[in-house]
Length: 487
Image 1 (cartoon, one colour):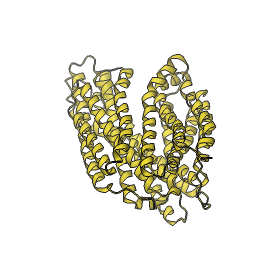
Image 2 (cartoon, helix red, strand yellow):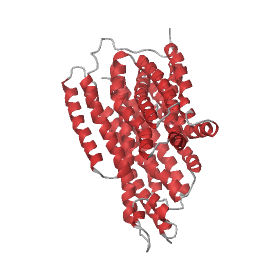
Image 3 (cartoon, helix red, strand yellow):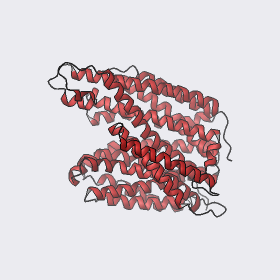
Image 4 (cartoon, helix red, strand yellow):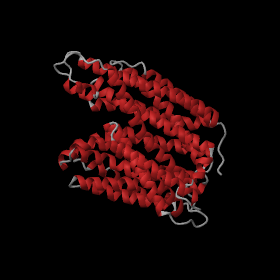
């Protein structure tokens, strides 16, 4: 039976929408579920973090597994597991049960994204059509991020917190019904070797400590446990790379990195994610703690940047039909750099200026995000599409973790050095803006001083981001001039 790839793309949009909805809805549900399950602060952090830990840890393994057993088969297996885990999470009766369900959701989620991208690679072999398809896929992801707070808010106003997790079950059921009919299967022409289990163990031992260490640094600053985790992850990562070089059929084919286009596109995605994650963190804190907006008002002001990313991800592939991909990516990065330059001019009363900067930065970054994914997938051989997709997704997870840790820490450092404590102000106010707000009553001038210092940190992060984007724009223009050919 001949399948229409565009209809299949609509089916692949289901897990994309689901994953982005799931992430954004949980933050809204956390206060209610924490009260209901009597979760303490540590348990709340694990409820939030265990999903991303498991997702990042299993992406490489699941990408390689899909290349061996079939991408559609893995996608549908993951969809079924995601649905079951969602029900378990919705009806969890203790923090430990919810943490376990969230861990299962992370493992299942790791099967969905690489399989989705690999199937797009197989369904759209022409690079131009694949670029359009990836742009649509990316816009669906951002659409879910935009709708998540609105849908989640409506659900949580009318139902209990578990409804936030049940939201994904109908999506998974529809995928399980439509997938076998509308999606093609892809298996390698020759039988592949089995998954190398020591490589799986080494990849987990490398990725999980690094993600944990970065999150710990972002939350608690420099401390021995975080540094030890990073060191352990790097050591195991070294062993993992050495083993992959010796295996005839490695879990992760390092030859993918030999492609200059693949490596450059991956670097742009990683560094772009670092900047945008740091910017998003500080912008959200600015809107709530400096501008004094409620969480709902903050969410509304962040919608325009998501809309800008949706539009940009659809426009970029169309421009790439007429211009070299490197040129389009460079223009987008330059626009993002201009947006970051606007952020450097924000003052404690500059909410509107910040929104303008975020819209420009988001619209611009959507160009390379859509195009570099296309370049990476097109430069990888079809039989390695799952591995290529998993590398891309893993770099995205690392980009967010690194951005929050490094740029968040940079903003905090500037805050501490720029804060001019008024007489009688407790030293605790120097640790963070949140701490300053808690002790500001009764200390004249502390609130304004803290808000000014935090805004200075936001300005510095904007300046650093603008420099990074300018360098990436030049790199994209020089390196991504040629259209990749599958090797």
